[in-house]
Length: 483
View 1 (cartoon, rainbow, N blue to C red):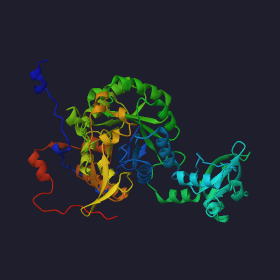
View 2: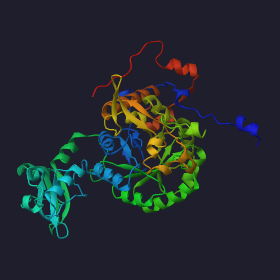
View 3: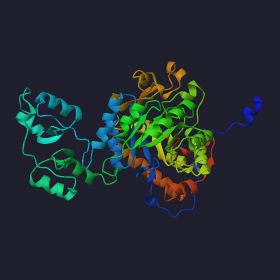
View 4: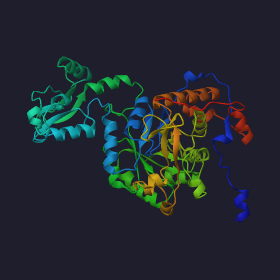
């Protein structure tokens, strides 16, 4: 192949601003559209949105808030394995009907130690156990708030404990908690060993969030990012999470494939791989890796990603999604596609779904929400939240996610740092994006996301056309959000 043909045969890597959805014949009103989807082979969502695994976007608070509304957040890995496991445990404990991962204390622990545990785990009461987890009491905040810090748990605990068993139903647990005016019901076996814990708080929350995505035990669905090369972290997280996301910028790499094979053999969670950006990458994943449950697609399109500038390599999300979807369709693979990068509004999500995506991953949008871990600042009368890329100098200082990018780029930043407008609670953003997506589905005439794959048609537009399609020729005030 001659060098000239590289130009003549170059593919058209279109982005969201290059296309529009064409309206079609419709019998579908927006409120009739169903946006339920799958994020991985075995995990369904009620809202097709995923928060990026970035340390200014998704920690436990964001993951909990999204799962309660029917979406999902992927816990970032720019921290120690112990810290990431602690975040996953927090998500799983947030509303479990029966908490199986019970944190207990010993009668000889001091009140001072107990108070530190309460602060560390944000828990106000613990079963007290000894001799192979046999229940001997319970201790709560009310028992210790005025107690001398040098006292021991056995000096302040309540020894007579009301308990339940694995056979205790939700209705029975509510009745017991109400009858005895207690907040926590330890679940024990015939030898009084602690097997779980039911709390009034979790029962109440379970009824509050009707659209929440939960596992078979009623706990919130949880996803976490890992390096393909960190099997110990993968195994540690596998005890708690439903999804593991192999998190590298360019997964179509022999070393990544070899490492992924080992992880796929060793874990039970659904494994999503990425990022990939071409038909050939998807083809190789489908034919060379057994058990992949999802594909994360798009390279270099994120608002704070500078990979395509620094290296001039990339695969815009819309282009990448269409190419990967073609490979999935050709091979008849049952693998959902997550469009990741460059998504700013519901229309972008609709276009991504028009070319085969099952759901969309966003960082910038969720970074501005109340539940994101980024710092909140006030500038010129408006609120903003900190946001930076995982390839930025700021993120790389933590060093835990250094291997997300290729070896040479460890000396080159592939991301930038900045601030995004504060958007308020994530629930409001989910409502805004879900409403916009349903409206787009109404224009197309698609009742479901699979119907979007079949019915949606696209038109190419010029730069002038893109400007005309957006609000223009007026003066608009900037966004202003109050706390």
